[in-house]
Image (cartoon, rainbow, N blue to C red):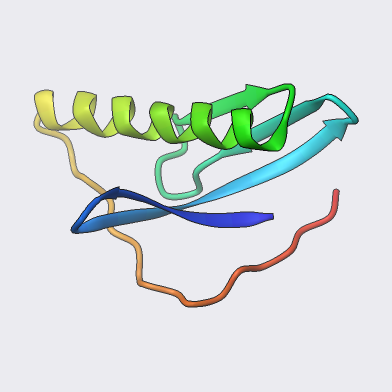
Length: 81
């Protein structure tokens, strides 16, 4: 599933969550490829991936690197893998 998470009032990013086994979820952010997370539950994975996105964006700011922007999308896409 792809979920849009709010990082700040002006920023939101899509997070892709895949279920690998019944108790192993893996998350990534296509716009911030270095941001990844995992968890035993969907919610844990989503939270860990969101924190990873926040840390990666902060690191990019500190290093003067580009902060990616995403186009707003009202859609949620389901992905089965």
